Length: 100
Image (cartoon, rainbow, N blue to C red):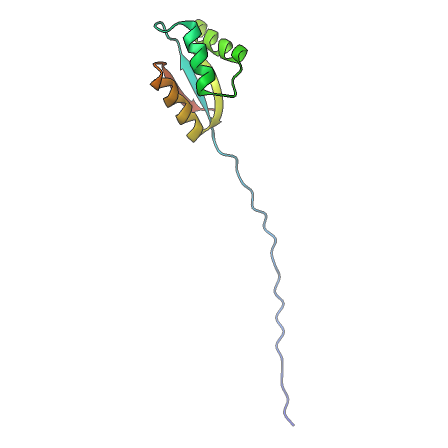
């Protein structure tokens, strides 16, 4: 008579949750522009950042005019770089900084 032994191994499945961190946010800043008209700056803001309404674009322009810079939008790095570069191609001074 043959005797077979069967080994039984219990495998526990660990449940590790994958937690995604949100992408770091960046501020797109418009710097005061003493050369272009206020109307032109508002027009370019709305053209470059389509989600800005006319009143929002006017507020950004007035903030830059009054304080030296205005917050255009806060978003992920790639769109922030794009918006800033597009503003620059239209003759406006712009920069980005971490939103921390």
